[in-house]
Image 1 (cartoon, one colour):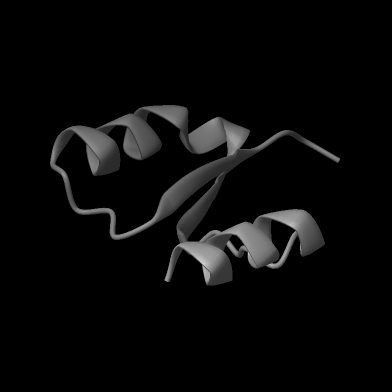
Image 2 (spheres, helix red, strand yellow):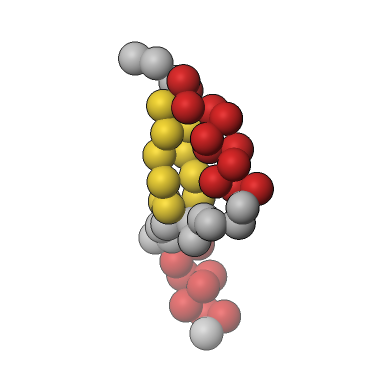
Length: 49
């Protein structure tokens, strides 16, 4: 197990699960999503393009 983790770390194989993405205008809703502990991964707040 540890050797697998070490190998993956060296080869940058890890992935991060993204639960939700919100535009910057919805920052309050994003915060509520996190406060309510509804996320099962990372919650991303996207800046305007």
